[in-house]
Image (cartoon, rainbow, N blue to C red; front, side):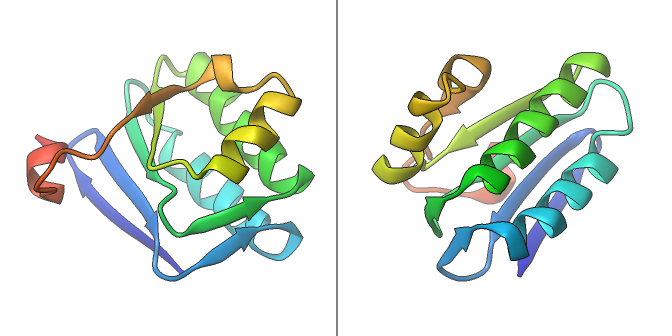
Length: 114
């Protein structure tokens, strides 16, 4: 379900197929992010291209990643956020906690990781 690519302290996390970040998936997402952010100064890029919607549990998983990143002096960046996900984040006043970046064109995961 989750695809992870890591180069040193930079991690690219993406979803393999179209998903809704809900109760069933948010626990797996949260556990994976928490394990990745245990090392200080980690840069985590989360590709939300395949995420169509997010519920409260998914938003809680995202905010947990933000809080852990602050504790470990890490950074969580989100890119390719759909309009529905952004609206859900704005309703909870979460959008100010994250860095939003766009995918370079043409996109190269290796280039982004460097």
